[in-house]
Image: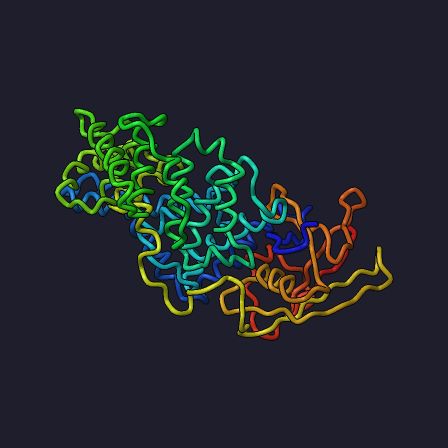
Length: 447
């Protein structure tokens, strides 16, 4: 029974969301959030930087061109978000990692236009956990969870306590239940080991044996060798120094006459590995490859999201091993599960349609910067008398039941959310930032 830790964009009126007028209201309300958060200057800066795109290729020096390309790429990646501030299904963590390594060392809650995408990453993961607590599906059990664990580190969240879920323990389980697949795909295996290493977790030496390979042979070429090298380098076990060196030498020998290491994606991983090595004398070998990636972004005019996710960290001369190296502010550290709530809000559930005037109110704990969605999760975590379920729809997470009271779309039923003023909310709970003494009513309704 998926009653805990559910990810939901609570849709107050699912049948209305597609209407153009509601999208306009969403944009206006989120604009107000950004203004109140005091980040309008950041938005103006992003627009100003975007206007400088055409001048990047004209910069006189390699350093200036590279820095300009990073700035341009970051702005383009931010602009690729949809109306829910998302980059699409299950790529939130990779986008957050790219932004973290390229520019944003810390995702501050005061930067609402940016932090709301961190919330989207959390929603992705919570939604998946609500359907499969072990996350052992082919999608999540073969490396995807590793990106999300790294995304937790990049945003100063604890992957060992993600709303009560130990993501690191789940990753370790993946090494067992997905062993057959992982042993044939050392890229995915190494990615999981990197995530475990960055979380400060130890693992058995047989895992390091598993990514070892015949020197000079890597099924997925430079891509695989780069991840294998970074995994060994992160762990730093001297017993595997020869395997680490073999992977690194393979990367260096794979450099083409034109200075690249293959296509943009392979070149990006090779450049990451070289910078991860810390060998400053080898950095010169990345210049041509970085120029190649910069040209690819400029040449495409509107680059694919996947391209930006791959090349931005490399152009910024960072690697996966740099994730989480910057100190988190004290207010950002620790678990995502609130221990001492800053304030309480009221949550009322009302149903006089399928229940006998069910009317119950709870006080939900909330910390500054958290959303109404977080309040629902927090309440679910702290009070056994409250539970809910949701499903994924075209418009995001749609609440289907509260305390076993299920709304049936066949019967034209849905859960409507009313704000403190008694009026229906016009946007999802994950984009609603409550204040102290706010009250919200979840009303079972027929349209």
